[in-house]
Image (cartoon, rainbow, N blue to C red; front, top):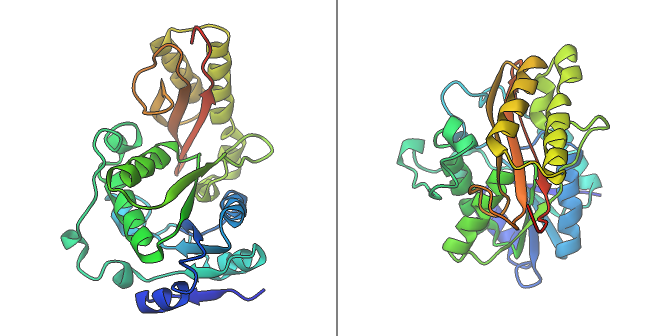
Length: 286
């Protein structure tokens, strides 16, 4: 199946205008696609008659010293995967199309509190860059639906909050994390791991799982559970743990009785920063 690819805003509008009335499902990505991305595409195909994917490595969401320059760019391989997956159009703009003015002059969107905790505390400005690029893409593509992975759970909540607060007419859908056979959440950054690090990496998922099992068994000493998990990761060879947190799954506030919990973690292993999360459904005493 052939896949149309466009780079310019004018091309994009010309291609999409006949589809707007029927509805578009949109999957924004930074490329280097894997099975997790393709699960998002599969969900998008269930939601609308037309599916649009974007590939754009967004400089606004990378901080100084982060991996913007070395982030893997595999456009031709990505295009082949998207064609096979039945995508209708690929939008792959250069930076000067997405941001016609110098980056320091671009307006930015800030989602208070949610953008400032967890990953936001360790990557200042990251989620402003995410919210800004997603809002611009929504305005260009005008989808009825947009699909995001639940691995980036904080990001998903931020986008939902932004859409609600700014009355952007798009329905946001989350898709469960796709994992390798040993539990490691699929991520483009997993390729930064050397073979020894790759063998250790599933400890992150196992530690999350151990914590959720403890919560289901009745433990409520959240700070101690977080401390134990952090120590387990460091002892397993992770060089730093940005956070291991147990929070309300709906708004990332402290746990409250009768509410679902999210157990979230970000940890460094070699050159890779890995993130993951698991949920615990509410029970009467949780």
